[in-house]
Amino acid sequence: MTNKALESKILKTLSIVPSGCVVSYGQLADLAGLPGRARLVGKCLKSSQETTPWHRVIRSDGKIAFPPGSELAEEQRTLLTIEGVVVKKHRVNIGIFGWKPSLYTLLAELEQ
DNA sequence: CACGTGACATACC
DNA sequence: GGGTATGCCACGT
Image 1: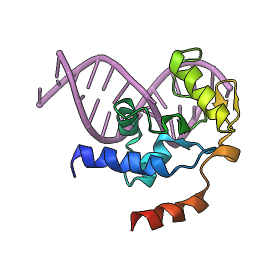
Image 2: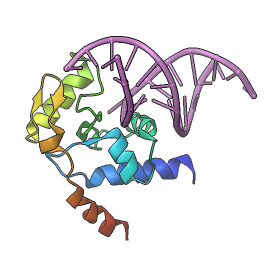
Image 3: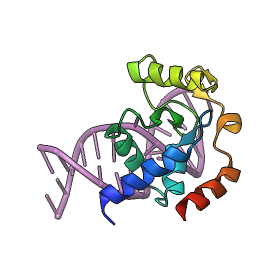
Image 4: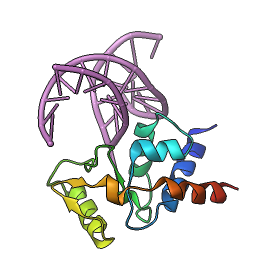
């Protein structure tokens, strides 16, 4: 399994995440079949296209992965707000906006 | 091949 | 909530 195949799988999984929802790096890696490879997800997003919904990926604790006040952090907060996700003090309420397990079935179907 | 680094995660305190 | 420590994996030096 080449590294490129893994990142394409990650981006594919990310493309399934609906607007208004967020997922953590670890959860995304897990759904893509790559448990424990959250850091690889970060590398993928860095080299990904602008069209990819990178802003829906946050840390497991709900915080944005960038330093507060940074350009990318502000952009991500803006994009999430546009989609209806409330970002309070650099943090997102995963309990409400997090990707629900029920959507996992959608992924399973798409994998066929 | 050892080491440091990074858009991470988990366990503790 | 914040801070520290450890584990993790891919990559460049």
